[in-house]
Length: 162
Figure 1 (cartoon, rainbow, N blue to C red):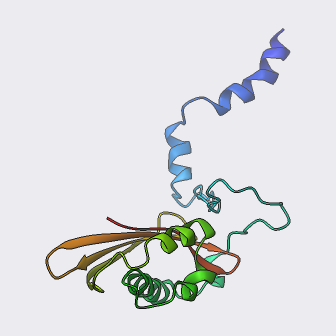
Figure 2 (cartoon, rainbow, N blue to C red):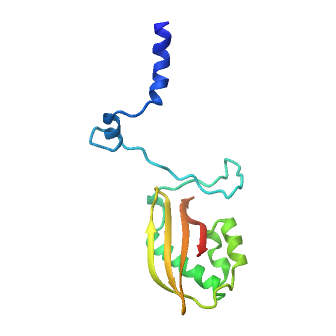
Figure 3 (tube, one colour):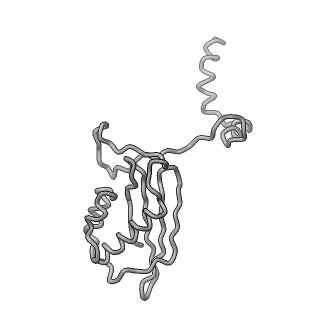
């Protein structure tokens, strides 16, 4: 009976609260144990993929410079929404669901706004979330976008003007 309890104990230990030493080692205190990292699972918007053709996350080293790329993409989207640029110019770097959403919004903006502030945030490796403060002639609005690094390129999976 005692041997049976010993075999079950390791499984129970997995679900017990972490000791102080375990917490410190997970935070990377120099003990040689690396902290846990979150990794990108590409957005599918409900689509199913054949595993051989599913999008694959890419490491940052294989992706283009995100600073310049996101600014160029956001300016392009603003010009598309103002009806001054063709939507096909962002087709390769936009998820199909987001692209179809952009198609319905072409010409919604009366003018191309000025960019006041541009903030980038990287919650996990391979994902960049952008918040852009836009100044129109009479009001201020915000554009929010999410970019994921898949198949060695940045892909916009969400874009919305609030």
